[in-house]
Length: 298
Image (cartoon, rainbow, N blue to C red; front, side, top):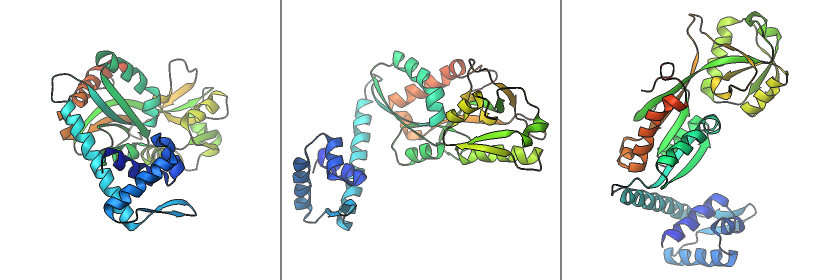
């Protein structure tokens, strides 16, 4: 078996379909079927069977998948280590990034970084912050950028702090909030908890939630069109927005802040591409993400 065989096994396991796997691998279905049959001959065991729901892996096939994933990961790590043995900063940088940060902050950072290091190829995976942490645990990415509190125990740097705020088209008074229409959106558990605790500390009745949407940018658009108010992180707002905002404070009058962190494993700093990005973020984030005196870098 070689790298192509490992990739075939992994892709087929993920897609559970000969046609979809063949399309993703840019080979014909007969060629893919032939390679699968050869793999099964090498192992002397049936790897897959055709079921009503598509391709199903046998117990032996499940073991082959584990082997293929381990070999692909080790091969990738070896290639990256070899590429980083010289003095040049080149190779592939794999980033896992919180979706909101990826949309509102990441593009300008990557543009500036690649102007300095044009020979680096960047792969980005986005998702909830909890998903990004799992990307790191599974060695799918070198660096994670996550939001909210976390329990990462290796390399961790505070990049940015922004206020949680009430946003509306017209000025509103805090005492009126329970009777005003509120727009909710799907978000991570930490942000939900922060908003919930703030509300519980200030009001003895639930909010009047009239709309619930799956995306925060949809929520903001509805707010802009006067459909209600929302409680959102400051990262979502730009200087061009004409919304009225009120920053949230705790009962002891401390601002409630949403934090953004950069996290990575200690060992990945041995890769020149990772060290270059970490150093770049530490140096540039105070200029790109906010004033250094208000948003310190650790």
